[in-house]
Image (cartoon, rainbow, N blue to C red; front, side):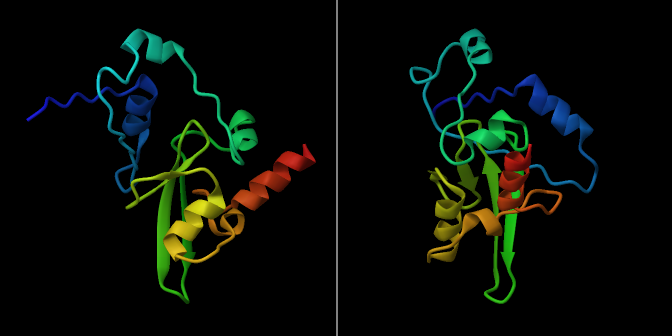
Length: 138
């Protein structure tokens, strides 16, 4: 069996320490080998440039890597949780693929075309569309 090493950034440790007793924190893990990843010092210095539809929200700080988004479709009995990845993708809980757009992530859950901009909500209840509108007003 291979060895598994988990390295947590100081910001993640700080976030875990600041969490309340009833708060759920979602941590996404990805598979890779030592050959695929840069040395720890280089990785800490390298920043990932967000791309795709969520890039502007990430670059302006309206959305942050690690933010948890959720959506509910009560009538259809659907719920989903996704984590924002630093490169601008969404990692949907229960899915092995990170999606390049909110709508693709929502469609993966609903199994039909879906407007992820109005379905995904931040922890404070704002839709991604509301964040996008806020960005356009500034």
